[in-house]
Amino acid sequence: MHIQDLHFSEEIIPLFDSVQNEFSRDALIGLLTGFPGSVEEVMVRQEILRNLVDNPALQAVFSYHRSEFSEVYGWLEELQSRGPGLSGLSLKMYWFFAARARKRESGRLALLVLFFYKLHRSWFSSIEEGLFPASFGLRLRNCKRFLSELDVVKYQAIAGRRGFGIGEMTGLREFLAVKIRRGELAAFWSDFFLFEAYLSISKGILRHRFVFPVFSDGGLSLSRFYHPLIKDPVKNDLLATERVNLLTGPNMSGKSTLLKALGICVVLAHLGLAVPAGRCELPFFGYISISIDLQDDLKSGYSHFMSEIKTLKSVVEAARSGKACFAVFDELFRGTNPEDALAISATAVTGLTKFLHSYFFISTHLYQLREMLPPAKESPNPASPGNVPVIAPGNEGIGTHYIDCRLEDREPEFTYVLRRGWSDLRIGQILFDREGLNELLG
Image: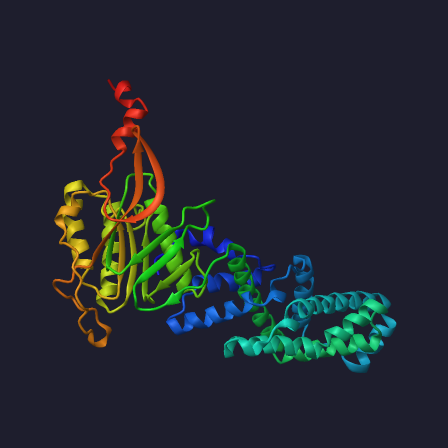
């Protein structure tokens, strides 16, 4: 997946981040950067998130203090690093005579019990693990069993009523020692961090009112999709049954933003998440590439144009290998002169139509390209043995879209509305003149 141009870590991940400790955040980042390898794995994630979203008790406002977690987690890590210590009668005798140590340990145990009781009461007591996919349901069951065996309800009541006695402190310490020795405490933390990461994502989905996509082979269809970081965005509809889709419109009309919004929907869908749209139906893609902010690669010594060539080559090689590809190219070949750009754009667009099961979106200012391309003509897709894309002559599959912009008294009026067709509108000279540059330059 080549999605760095979506600025995913800086802009998209924060939409789903409400975790309350750094370990859950690591799990969250793992979920939002690790792509499932099949549509079946995607649907497993969807099922987990749907069940979390549909549980009102889990979505209620609840948080624990980061310092509270740090105290509990740090102390348990300290116990683990110290290894086996006093136990049984020896531990009781030690605490009987060491009043200061007993008081300090009692406070730590009370904080631990209270922390785990909050997790039990606010989250795990309201979960029916049988509703979830088997692997995740097992993780939930392990968390619930750990809290049940710790008997957090009883010990929380004791801690709140009179404090722990020496016998109760000894029992708790020995319980924790057993769980540490068997690896059950480490397993609990791992399962808990993953659960909190999923829960955080579900809260983001609800907060932003995203919808879960549907995977099918019937084309790429979105209604009312938008970029989630734009305040009061224009929401657009898109139906793409053609393999190559050209996007035109004047500068500042919103082409790059629309392509980013489309890319965000496709990427989130393939992560198993909900998307910023009213409805989304799409195929499952084995290769995703988003090229919007392509820059010179100074480290490798590539110019902007060579970076475009390398990116396109990677996409074509993936398509030729049999992968269903989704690729976005914002103003393809803008890094070379107009004559070269026009010629190779025509070759690229025509060539990309030959890869079945893939979808390519290309924005362009090369208006002459319209006259160089064959008319759109759809024919039934031939069989494709072994999922290798068939290069089918006469099956062009080129769609055209534009972002509407109107001129009112030689002033551009940007609507940001996506329409079918082609735009030849040019506003560069108008803006040049409006700013008085013709007069300033004589």
